[in-house]
Image 1 (tube, rainbow, N blue to C red):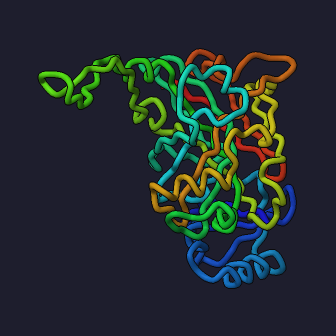
Image 2 (image 1 turned 45 degrees about the vertical axis):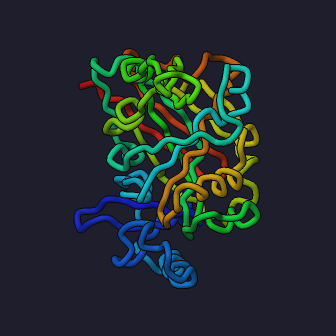
Length: 307
């Protein structure tokens, strides 16, 4: 089952895919996929089935899309989680590394990604994302997939220029009882991602969430990214360094997961046969339209608007 959230004159509503060209409206009580989470699954499935059989039909091409979960409790993003990365990593952890993206960065399918000259270079990062259905802490690895409501697409828009601006090279203070002053200084680098990952519109999400039962293996999905119809990335979720289960289990050991949380699984990096790396698609300079496609989920397309 494929579900999404759209904007209508009377407010936001959840829709269910009927075909490639049409959706059906769920009842007005469903204004966001968050309304389906945490409650009885049989209830929302029944509402979706009734919508498919007798609900109002709308043309997909006429819809104004919102993020499927408009204000998730948190958006966790996993850094450098692709098999292409180990050759690039000079040093780093042997466990998933995560950062948080603000929900204010989210936009829906078809909405513009805003770039400004002061942002410098801005590029797309096509990724599989998980929507958490059942929350929890310290989730065992073998139970992790049972906490997934469904799978969607996120484009983790990033500005390397702002990352450079917000990176410190400094001397960290570490305790050292062998030194007279009790400390030692260690040369360190640290970067803070609030601007370069979390600026407004830097989180296109959706349009569809494919429910977990409809995807037999989330690690066997082709993922592509095009810029103005030029194929830039052609990868597969089989190349994730850490699996969906590993990430959910690991993250829940530190951050209690809540219904509606979004977890971005890491950038698809494998270049297409015809083109360069996704990091070289400078949206500030090039503008255009970015499309991310994931097998069994759909296509997330967003134009770039320069302000």
